[in-house]
Length: 421
Ligand code: ASP
Ligand code: MG
Image: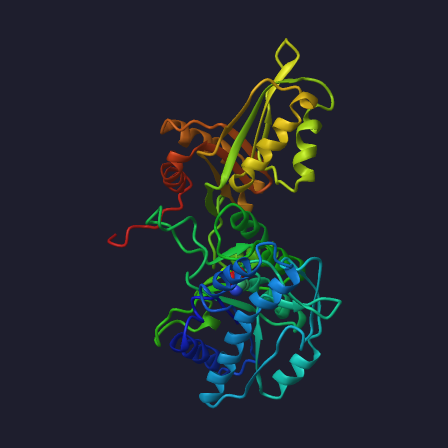
């Protein structure tokens, strides 16, 4: 079981979490619990680091920010004990949860599950601070913002858990953002691949890395809400969204538990910016000249279009970068202007990327055509397109985001049936 920051924010909420944990244990389950810091706490700690030293040493930053989870893990163990349960906390270095790569963005290398399993078998509930691990040098590390999700999946894999329940402040993964589409439906199940696409294109329910790890390790994940009443559906009845392999999804469809859709969900992302370089020489190596400096600066390029060269031997190149990196990208490209040999550099951050995602489109033609036609019917102009096996993304004007999401949600038959019917 993993609980996010809003679920851990204060004594009363921790008591509620303790009751959910106790119920699972009472149902005959061995339980390991991974916790986040209290909501807002990590931001507060990050700010202290900035104030202390703007050029902070990442190793010391980790010492500071990892403390939020240390507090909540101890508090949850105390609360469980106060309710008569046997519980103890296991800090990252005590397990140990070994990480590699740099501080502040460490990756899990290995977890020794032995002591944890022994303690759980003796009837103890294990409480583990998320987000933190230990480096080869024996120093505390943290795994990037939102990293507790990844801790939870990694621990579930290490102890061979039947399931990794991620309790958060939403009750599952939806067909789209319910704040935009009132008729968005909660999905009973999505595949790892779909969740990866949805997570990386803006449905920020889980840290993307945690989904990749779950896929690699075959961990069955459920996303569900901790904000439930006493008469709520028990977690074992799967009230949230299950994230599963394609094989398990096919079984769910065959058993009639999940309906087969061509499109599973629609995501939107307003955090990208568009860059256009006009009149780039249409010759081998020209595009490499553009993207090489961006790659060296670790700027992620997403959509790319190169117009068909016109007779003049020149072409326009359009691509997107994260809005946060736009200024850096612009500076780098201006610097390389002579090397690349473009005419004008035009940028626009008022764009949005809308993506329709679904494993169903692997075996069904016409998904992209439906998207283009539905947007055209509303006069929404498509500026760029990218596709993968299970995703079609378009770039549109940012002001048309909400309209586009609504139109597509209806076009793919995803709207919930009217309650009144
Ligand atoms: N507390 C950390 C953060 O806010 C890790 C997490 O909650 O997942 O990013
Ligand atoms: Mg989170």
